[in-house]
Image 1 (cartoon, rainbow, N blue to C red):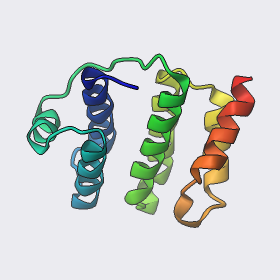
Image 2 (tube, helix red, strand yellow):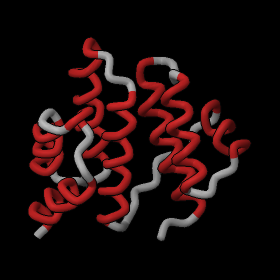
Image 3 (cartoon, rainbow, N blue to C red):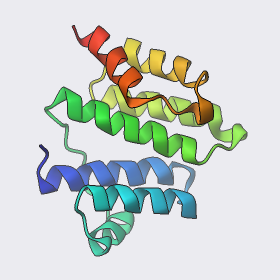
Length: 135
């Protein structure tokens, strides 16, 4: 399991992802706040991270990186403005690469995403994609 500093880093990364287009919409804020609660991060710490991001910490666990990538997929699809879709897909792809995930797996997730309702890849499908590439 990840420690507090890693949790703060994960959340900070997600905030940076949401702020990529300069502002966090209320639906994104509420989603991120829910993730913060899931990670046992207080609202005060969460709000502090919005204005004061911390450095990215690379997760050692491959499974934790997959979970984080899935969170980013969900975050991206919360705000489904069609004009930002291509930009967001590129952004998500780059975040996945930075996490050390295989480009084949990332590409497959992004391709398959279009075939699911609301573009949300079910966790079991996502895990299978990464398992196949990891082995």
